[in-house]
Length: 338
Ligand code: WQD
Image 1 (cartoon, helix red, strand yellow):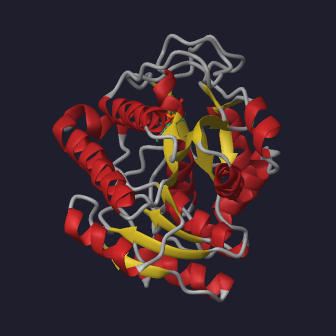
Image 2 (cartoon, rainbow, N blue to C red):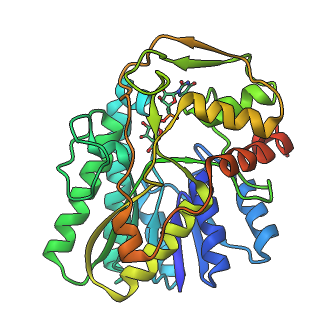
């Protein structure tokens, strides 16, 4: 099939483009490069031997989005494009609601006009909010507690309403937990702009000498070692999950929700130890105060993706850290060195 990937030069997007091409699909990428580099696509093409068509297009430009659909006979869409920093969304909610919601509405209207009604949407575990029991199950009530998470929840609602109103739509909502790691080649990986918000890219930048030390946000939680537990998932496993979801909805109309996680929680210190093993030396760190908004622990109930998609994670935390480190060691400044 010909798959349009929005946000396809990003961390998860670029790994998914690679998995799609390895599965034999043709890929078209739309990205505005606000938070990524098209060098990622050049490297994916190096790895697969198949260049993806690339349009430097912003989803807020409805005419430009329409032109992409007019040029390519797209069969389905995987939609990653969106702003995703929780903290920034709290300080700049209007920017997040405008970019994430209007961008998605433009995409969906263009799809409908061009009779493309199959979409896999990149949602997030953050939609489960802070009141659900662990492990999170897809049928639970959702209620995000930050503007970023609320945009994900509202896009899920838009897609659910669309699927209920028009039986021609095939829709998969994928709720990611904590993606980490990189393609084993070390040629593509996570390249956050500015100071990384997330744990593993921050650890990787300390290990490669770009940051002085890791601040562990809280060591006094009610968890085995006092630090927070999260469900870390290798980005290659996550990319494969998208291909599996795409195949599933290709045959079935309707709206489907799946958690993409490992089903187990790992602590901040366990992740740090695993990364130190990959690097072969201790990584400077200090346990400091808690970060506002953090939950002590959450992880996925991953049974429905296994049952419906025959998909589950296959890579261990050590493999995630080894692969993340190989990428960071080989690309100390991410893609910008090129
Ligand atoms: C993990 C743990 C931190 C950095 C976020 C978003 C979520 C999703 C994934 C988009 C926490 C601790 C972190 C640091 C630390 N993104 N930590 N020092 O918060 O689980 O989820 O990213 O969909 O929406 O909320 O991930 O990597 O930020 O934090 O101690 O420098 O690591 O306190 O316990 P999180 P994270």
